[in-house]
Image (tube, rainbow, N blue to C red; front, side):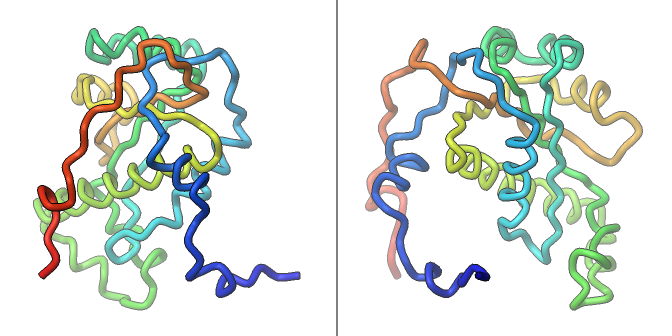
Length: 204
């Protein structure tokens, strides 16, 4: 029987599901040695790719760092405070942004044959790549939590070094890095405050 998307489209997720994704989810700083399978990484990407981006430009590129050899290349490029937990995490994910994403638009956005030409300006293309790869990074974090994984996103790393080591000779630049796996409560900070609706939002 085919899945009927209309049957669930307007139905909110359960409270336990919302807790898993948002209210009880935590950024992890320590990790168990439970492995993350390649099949699960494929499933994670296959969920992430459906998140919306401008004209479906999907500029994010994902490098899953899992082997000791690959980790040995990445860990020295992380900031000092991020090195130990990145080494402990079973997977480190470099989320990059392809500044030449527009070359894929004839395939990704076929409804507008001229969409590639909308991004000939390099500065505008960089802005779009950063904004939309960041969106995709957010989808990635939620997809990981939905699959029962924990995440630890980080911006403390050497961007030029990661670019040279993992994206040489390409138009891809790193955006941020995520530790991925099954977290523990070790080094877990108390939950930080959040702004109230009245402090961060308005209804006009």
